[in-house]
Length: 176
Image (tube, helix red, strand yellow):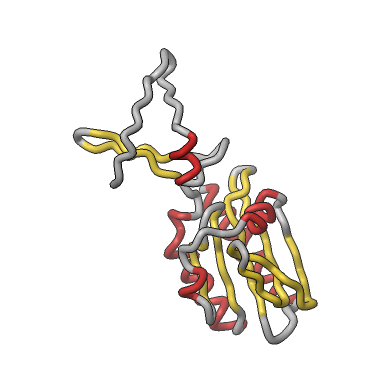
């Protein structure tokens, strides 16, 4: 843990202001959730990801979809790629998503693109592919996204249905 040497006073309602430098460094935005971790002698705050707690399950889902559909598949929360199966796993797994992908999550995109188009998963990393993306919503809030894509053939209607089923499953799982 790195100390930034910043102190803040708690107001009468028990609130504190997290300095802008810290919010920017941790990519904390308005309406994001923070997790409180209590230790014997202190407290730590961590950005909370609803899907993050499902990282193992998300990886199992992407592995299974890849095995049966021979497609590259990823699941991301609002910050980073949590699960990825395909040729570029090291390139994407646990990397911060790009601003365009975050905007897609915020717009609750559901796209079926059978023709080859550019998609930007990480900032300045464009892939020309045929793809499906479906936003994962939990308790009326955008929690993340699932993307299935091919760089060598068009995505199919069957794959679209499967992606919708996986997104729906994750949504229901998060709401329980």
